Length: 101
Image 1 (tube, rainbow, N blue to C red):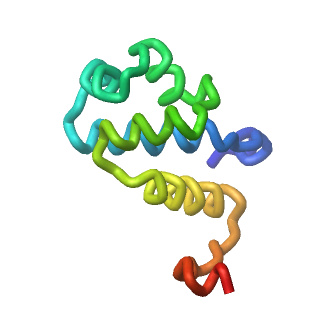
Image 2: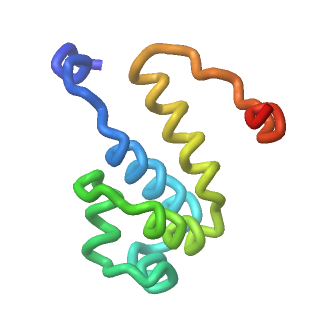
Image 3: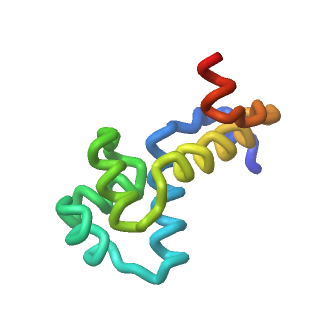
């Protein structure tokens, strides 16, 4: 990593977009296919993937639905990426029943 990259803060929207794009490409799907299925414009989806737009939770859910991928998985991947940028160890994920107790 270059020194100037280490000084640049990472944005959550960039990590979300990167993670969504990686999954879409892994699945071999096009932006057009996902935009049609998620009912979001092709241009807007492209901006979300490039980290230029902050997607609402509703939009993220629609995109994840089009990718047949739980939103929680995307958020977990984003969390792990953020932890890597921050050079910290992520907290272990607790089952929902334990978290509520």
